[in-house]
Image: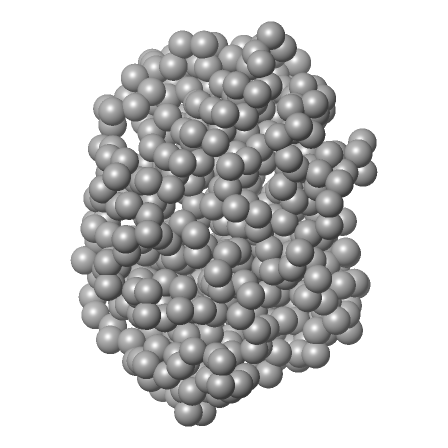
Length: 547
């Protein structure tokens, strides 16, 4: 089945050659980069001069956001919109850090919390306790990648998800050509709402931003901890800048080779397993909103998602909350067992009181909802400002996380089946995703097929991110991970070559650092002291989340 899906979404053609899930567009074709000692281009006279970006230093100050920790500092770094043509304009990226407690720190360690589409500033602010141990020897830094959070946030409009669902999850009587036309209209709306940054959100672009940050932080080498999608970003950085890799830990290892369609199926299956496990736990709790029978609880969740798709619930923020919004919220709540009580309470609020606030908070990844995205045409693509400043916190669109996720994933995926093939295969894809998960299948399929109407992505990751010549890197895979299957850890380690050291986390949940004391200790020991476990060693299931 996976092989057939791969062929379907490849459209029978060979991809031509650039970078993936964040790594898309214009920057993908630029090879080599910068002689960092001087800040000047090093790969030939045809490379643009990026010296002014590499000459920056970050000015840190107290953060001004709501409810942010008082010891969190914020700053910005400026990067080109298009690395191939720096004169097209610039973007400001939001950064945050906790200062090292040491009098003589070894520099910075940069964190990426995944997504794609997750805000690093928010992740660092609210995950504070998890990372304080690293401040023994580092400034701990994270950032909002381009198109995410306050860094020129992208949006597709309030109804993009529901419109995509109409196209991909509709009745068999729906004309597939009408469905694909609607998907192209959604793609056009994303471009109108997002502006020029949308075409430059590939991982190769973000990896280049990461190198500008490294220099601006004053570090000769990048020390890095990436989660989920952040592992792919780390691998791309290591492939592009092997001589700039310091201590790099990758937790919840992403695939470097699977087509987007197969990633979606794997994700739907993993999320369904995690939901089944959650409902088994929930049914043992008196407060479970679905009663004490796990089988009927599963049926109730499916019915609830379908009911909200048929009759969405109005919210206080000017949009309607749909079943697919609920599927996204549940997915967020399943990432770790630690989140299960939060998810249970949010679902109880929804089913018992009609209150969507809890599931809305989960669906938006914890970002404060904005009243509405900017109207179409306000940020026209092709007419960038000379500089794109940080967005105000209250102006980050509610759909920024899913919009950024789609932008990055489509830019990273070189497979673009033509309309004829998609028309022929759409009903089969619906059936395959529905079989994988009646709750998450339609949601995951919508994310995949929404690439229709967008430019073809790069094949840089598939072709170039392999056989790395870097210092040893620590890769952590979790056996019960609902989002990044353990198989991907094994496959990615094999691709990266002898540089990869694998730690097998025999637990549940997405990533291990926040749930397993053993994984947390092993990663900290590596980042702080350079101490690596033997490749193939494991952490036991006894270190799972405690609820």
